Amino acid sequence: MKRLILTSLSGSCLRRFGLAEAVIQFGFRFIAQPLPPAIRLEAFLDARSDQGPGWHWTDWNPKVGSPRPVRSRHIAFTEYCARYDLIELWFDSTVEDQLQLIWLLDFFESHPETAAKLKLRLIGFDLIMLERAPDLKHVPLADISPQELRTASMCWQAYRATTPEACIAVLKQNLSAFPLLRPALLDLIQELPSRITGLGATEIRLLELIGAGFVSTNALFYLRGFRQRGVFSDMEIGTLLEGLAHGPRPAITGLDDELRTIDRANLRARLEAYQRSRLSLTDFGKEVLAHKQDFSRHNPIDRWWGGTHLTNDNMWRWNPTLMKP
Image 1 (cartoon, rainbow, N blue to C red):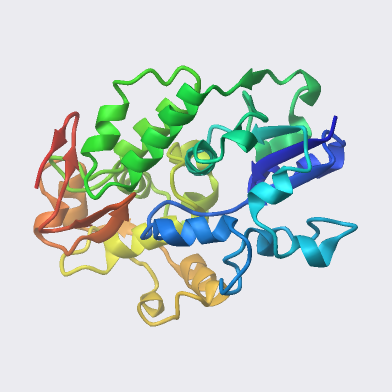
Image 2 (cartoon, helix red, strand yellow):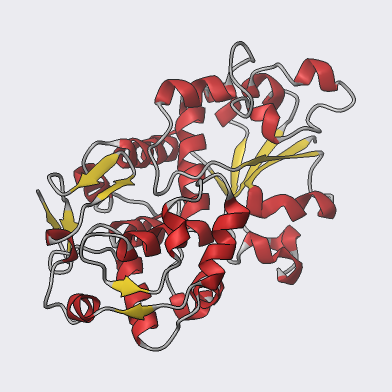
């Protein structure tokens, strides 16, 4: 039986364990930025035509198709999947992985012949820490029914919606087939602006840590046990810090001012600027942290939550229920 594993970038180590004939990785970040248009995501998995660099699934998997690499670099993803008898989905509990999982299942719902081969690995550890994982052959393997494909598709479409209302509604559905999905959605929902402070859970946690004496951005980026929030990547944490520091009424001070002008594509220079920073709370930041001020009343808000564009005029809030603008 020929086996194919689909996973995230965190699952790169799976190739070393000989669990399948092939491992295909996906690395989309569906967080903190505009979601790719549905038509572009469809083209990503279709046969290559006029997709630009990085926008065909084989671009992320350069060794795909050996010993027929030239032909395989152009085929549709379903055509590649047809070579295999069993397709295993390995996605861990991180928000990033769970969003990639429901995106793929939404795609497979329209391809029942391929979907019939799917199995879901119920992973109780972080894939990026795979060296410390238990015996991988004993990770539970679950079937995926057509009803469960519809459920995953419903969750993906809810996250893509232009308001968070549909995403709140799916939490009332039976998500037991995807035991890691509900916690991931709840983590995302807590990143909506608070009714009182106008900030998401990670932003408030950053203020708490800075107020407690964590003056270095290294600690905020990498000491995840202290940070506790796992929705955003390290550089996305940096963007949150800029939002807290560079508005008309900043909540923090000490963030290197060169970050205002360094190109966002210049990750090395930006990281060096973060590392030079020594952070502290402003008096206003202390008031926000004490729930005495609303950050969004004094500063511009312009960020994305799934398909929802959060702005000062479109501030969907959460705490502990959804509030319309």
